[in-house]
Length: 170
Image (cartoon, rainbow, N blue to C red; front, side):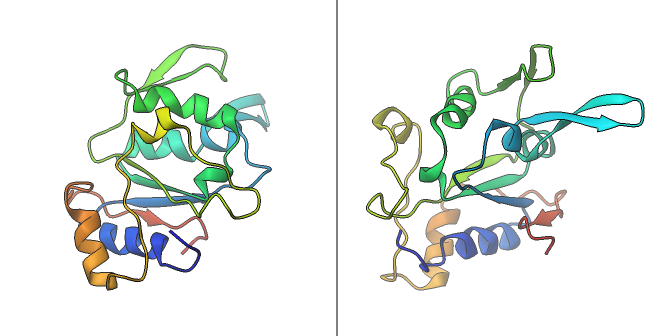
C-alpha cells in the first residue's frame, strides 16, 4: 500500500489483539544479511557469533515485520528464500557451521512494501510473490476492518507470547 496507510500499525494491532509477539525491522539500502541472520561480534575472549533479528524471531515464534521489503537487496531475499520454500528453514552458514534453524510455532514473516514507483523500490519477483499471501492496504477499509482481514488466517493466537518490540525500543 501507499505510504501512511497504516500497514505497520495494522500488523502491530493485530499482534496485540491476538497476543502474538512482534518485532520490526525497517530495510534501507545499507541493510545486509548480517542484519537479518547475524554476525561475528568482538568479545573480551575474542569473537562470538550473534544471531540477528530474523533468527531470533524464528527461535521465539514471533511475527517479524520487514518494512520497506521492496528496498531489500537481492542477497537478503536469497537468504530468506529457503524459509519460504518447502524446507521452511534457514541454514546459518555465517557462523562457520551449517546449522539449520526451524521456526518455532507462531512465527510469521510479514513484508510491507510501498509502490514500486517510489524511488529506490523495485517490484518483487513473480517467484517471491507466488510464495506470499498479499493483502493490499489502503484507505478503503477502516483500521478495524483491516485488522479483521489481516487476522483471517495469517496470525493465530498464542497466549504464551507477550514480548513485543517495534525496533525502536517501544
